[in-house]
Image 1 (cartoon, rainbow, N blue to C red):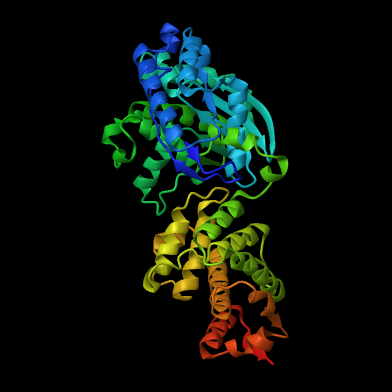
Image 2: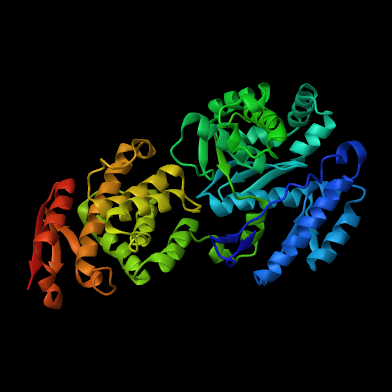
Length: 475
């Protein structure tokens, strides 16, 4: 994975994966399989060459359970280090668990729950309470390890899983809280669930399944022939042999931890490592706002105008008397930053294109209802305040309250862009405030000629939404 830079919300510019199966026989033979070693080293030669082509300046290479446990692990690491031309960090189980939890911290807004990272060799469990990492444990329950230990018998694997998890006291910390599921096999389960239920967004990060439903779905997947499952093609062929083992582990984790919900994350050890390299101040910054700012700089006519929109709508909301939670405020700020990213599209498609970009963007730090709110607010800004053209399934992700707020913010943005023409410096001198029961837009001095019927009509539409009378004041 190559990133544009080390930031609070790093943007991947290249991603390639090879499933070499290094841990396939470690439990039974104590060794990394010879063909897996050959495949892995060949992949690393290509990866090193790609780093040279992409002019990568900083390189981190990490190894996990299979390499630290195999008798020939050190020899493989030495060969790999020569190819990569850098030191390879062999993570301990505790360090791997810590970085998994930091990955969740980096990409989930204010997480609180139990983190589980299922790899090929091991399962890491960490009790994460806000930004504090508490008890952590690593268990030999990775998909490859489990299949090897059980001699490819799911019945035997179930006994191994039950025995290993029975001694994991960390699971008790999961009752009634979120369980954050990390790892490729578990993400494959999430994608399968999305397709089977007709879910409107195909974004795995922050996908939520209620605990009981996750338990039942995991049981289904591990008990039937996976090739018979509907939409199994959304899971890569290389993942399918381990799908039942991953489902088995998750089924038992959910049964024993009793979480309220399972939340899937695409961020794990790798992103946790990058997050650990940041200063404390940057770690505490909001990843959603950081990502929205990056998109604002890349795609908007004036990034400064997006920042001004935040303050302009702050004043409007404060004067309006409309209640707004801290979470709703940060979503509104993100919507302001990405409100102009579709301007290069044909006018007839700006709303649709903006909605699709936002709904499916590589944002972190936002759940799916939050994505829907931001996408709908910007959609309304382009197409008007009716939602006839919005997919009913996408609307279902947002509550009635969020849909109402998205329409209000979209209406405010429609006024702002007619006033400013997307240029900075105008909005600070043209406040829109609720005063004495009226929604008043003030255009004074050189901005007075901006007043007109089209602008007043948009102001009136917004005023109706909030139950006020519109007025434009000029000198």
